[in-house]
Image (cartoon, rainbow, N blue to C red; front, side):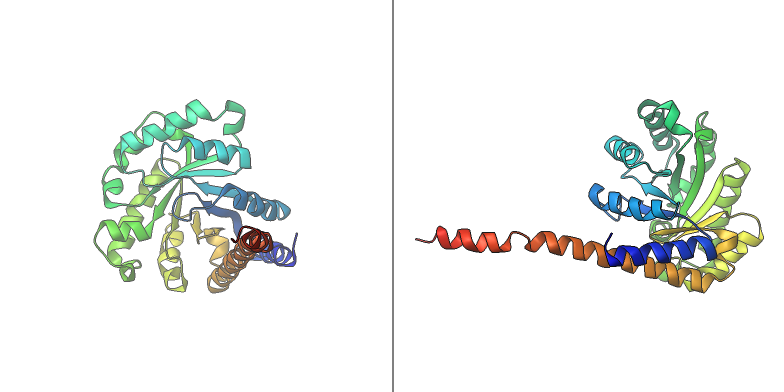
Length: 261
C-alpha cells in the first residue's frame, strides 16, 4: 500500500471506531467506478474489517451483479427501482444469478428515489419476493429532481414528508430504512427527526455508510471525516491514473522519432 492508502486505512478505522461508519459505498451507476478501482477500495475496507456496498447500474444489471460477487461485496443496491415490475426484475436476477450460499452474505437493497417509486411502493413491497431485500434507501437528490425541485429544496418539509412516508412503509415491511443524497451538515436536523421517530437505521454519504444513531453523536465531525476519506480516495485514484497515463510516454517519444520521415 502507498502512503495515501495507509492514511485512508487510518481515517476509515477512526470512522468505524468513533463515528459509526459501518460500510464503504461504491457505485457502478452514477460514480462509474471501474472494477480495478473497486478491488483497491475493497483492500482498504478489508483492512478495517468493513464491507463494500455496491450500487449497480440498474435492477437487471447482470454483469454488475457478477462483478459484485467477484469483488466479494457485503451489499448490492439497485437504483431507480420505480415500479413493482422493476423490483420483480431485480428479485429475479438475484434468484437466477446469485448462488444460494452467497445470498446470506449479501444484503440486497433498492433505491426509492422518485415520486413515481414512492407512489408505487405499496405494490413493490407486496411482491412475494420482497422479503429478500434487507434495506430500502431514499435517494433524496433524484427525489427532488423527479418533483422538479432544485437541490436547495432537499431538506424541505415536502421532501421530509415523502422521505418519512417511505421510511414508515419500509419499517412496516420489516426492512431497514436508509437515506442518502446531499448528506451535509444542513441535513442533520432532517436525519435527527427520522431517528427520533425510530424511522431510520442508516444514512450515507458518497463513500461512507453510517449507523444513524452513532453517526449522529457528533454528526458534523462524522460528515467532515467522511468527506476527508472521499477526498483521499479521489486523490489516490487521480495519482493511479496519472502514473498509467505517463508510463509509456518515453516509449512513445522514441517511436515517434524512429518513424519520422
